[in-house]
Length: 110
Image 1: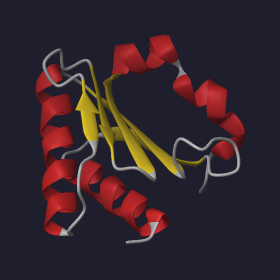
Image 2 (image 1 turned 180 degrees about the vertical axis):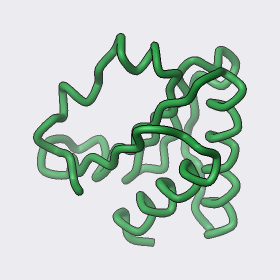
Image 3 (image 1 turned 120 degrees about the vertical axis):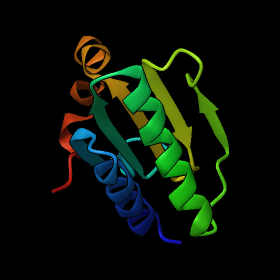
Image 4 (image 1 turned 90 degrees about the vertical axis):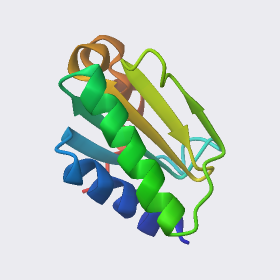
Protein backbone atom coordinates (compact mmCIF):
# COMPACT_ATOMS: atom_id res chain seq x y z
CA UNK A 1 0.00 0.00 0.00
CA UNK A 2 1.29 3.48 -0.83
CA UNK A 3 2.34 5.56 2.16
CA UNK A 4 -0.17 8.32 1.40
CA UNK A 5 -3.05 5.82 1.27
CA UNK A 6 -1.83 4.26 4.52
CA UNK A 7 -1.66 7.68 6.19
CA UNK A 8 -5.23 8.43 5.11
CA UNK A 9 -6.38 5.07 6.47
CA UNK A 10 -4.73 5.99 9.79
CA UNK A 11 -6.49 9.38 9.74
CA UNK A 12 -9.83 7.65 9.20
CA UNK A 13 -9.22 5.16 12.03
CA UNK A 14 -8.34 8.00 14.41
CA UNK A 15 -11.39 9.98 13.32
CA UNK A 16 -13.59 6.92 13.90
CA UNK A 17 -12.51 6.97 17.56
CA UNK A 18 -13.06 10.73 17.83
CA UNK A 19 -9.42 11.75 18.10
CA UNK A 20 -8.96 15.50 17.78
CA UNK A 21 -6.65 17.78 15.81
CA UNK A 22 -5.52 15.00 13.48
CA UNK A 23 -2.57 16.14 11.37
CA UNK A 24 -0.84 14.32 8.54
CA UNK A 25 2.68 15.63 8.01
CA UNK A 26 4.54 14.87 4.81
CA UNK A 27 8.13 14.51 6.01
CA UNK A 28 9.56 12.51 3.10
CA UNK A 29 11.85 15.34 1.97
CA UNK A 30 13.03 16.08 5.51
CA UNK A 31 13.94 12.70 7.01
CA UNK A 32 14.55 9.08 6.17
CA UNK A 33 12.53 7.97 9.20
CA UNK A 34 9.21 7.93 7.36
CA UNK A 35 7.22 9.53 4.58
CA UNK A 36 4.37 10.63 6.84
CA UNK A 37 3.82 11.32 10.50
CA UNK A 38 0.22 11.23 11.69
CA UNK A 39 -0.39 13.02 14.99
CA UNK A 40 -3.63 13.08 16.97
CA UNK A 41 -4.83 14.28 20.38
CA UNK A 42 -7.05 12.44 22.83
CA UNK A 43 -8.73 13.38 26.09
CA UNK A 44 -7.66 10.38 28.22
CA UNK A 45 -5.35 7.38 28.35
CA UNK A 46 -8.37 5.22 27.60
CA UNK A 47 -9.05 7.14 24.38
CA UNK A 48 -5.35 7.09 23.43
CA UNK A 49 -5.33 3.30 23.74
CA UNK A 50 -8.67 2.94 21.90
CA UNK A 51 -7.37 5.07 19.02
CA UNK A 52 -4.12 3.11 18.81
CA UNK A 53 -6.07 -0.16 18.85
CA UNK A 54 -8.34 1.09 16.05
CA UNK A 55 -5.34 2.07 13.90
CA UNK A 56 -3.78 -1.35 14.47
CA UNK A 57 -7.05 -3.16 13.67
CA UNK A 58 -7.78 -1.21 10.48
CA UNK A 59 -4.23 -1.48 9.16
CA UNK A 60 -4.03 -5.18 10.01
CA UNK A 61 -7.31 -5.70 8.10
CA UNK A 62 -5.68 -3.88 5.16
CA UNK A 63 -2.69 -6.24 5.31
CA UNK A 64 -0.23 -3.81 6.89
CA UNK A 65 2.21 -5.03 9.52
CA UNK A 66 3.03 -3.02 12.64
CA UNK A 67 6.82 -2.90 12.89
CA UNK A 68 7.10 -1.45 16.38
CA UNK A 69 5.05 0.26 19.06
CA UNK A 70 5.88 2.19 22.22
CA UNK A 71 3.98 3.76 25.08
CA UNK A 72 0.91 1.54 25.29
CA UNK A 73 1.41 0.79 28.97
CA UNK A 74 1.63 4.45 30.00
CA UNK A 75 -1.02 5.63 27.58
CA UNK A 76 0.00 9.30 27.43
CA UNK A 77 1.75 8.90 24.05
CA UNK A 78 1.56 5.81 21.89
CA UNK A 79 3.81 5.55 18.86
CA UNK A 80 2.99 3.08 16.08
CA UNK A 81 5.66 2.50 13.44
CA UNK A 82 4.52 1.21 10.06
CA UNK A 83 7.81 2.00 8.33
CA UNK A 84 6.76 4.71 5.90
CA UNK A 85 4.05 6.00 8.26
CA UNK A 86 4.65 6.75 11.95
CA UNK A 87 1.62 7.42 14.14
CA UNK A 88 1.69 9.51 17.33
CA UNK A 89 -1.46 9.27 19.45
CA UNK A 90 -1.13 11.58 22.44
CA UNK A 91 -3.04 13.01 25.32
CA UNK A 92 -3.65 16.67 24.62
CA UNK A 93 -1.37 17.86 27.45
CA UNK A 94 1.47 15.63 26.26
CA UNK A 95 1.11 16.89 22.71
CA UNK A 96 1.14 20.50 23.87
CA UNK A 97 4.24 19.89 25.99
CA UNK A 98 6.36 18.16 23.31
CA UNK A 99 5.00 20.18 20.36
CA UNK A 100 6.53 17.81 17.80
CA UNK A 101 4.72 19.62 14.99
CA UNK A 102 7.02 22.59 15.60
CA UNK A 103 9.94 20.44 14.43
CA UNK A 104 8.13 19.52 11.21
CA UNK A 105 5.97 22.61 10.65
CA UNK A 106 6.93 22.91 6.96
CA UNK A 107 5.87 19.30 6.42
CA UNK A 108 2.15 19.74 6.98
CA UNK A 109 -0.07 18.53 4.18
CA UNK A 110 -3.63 19.61 3.71
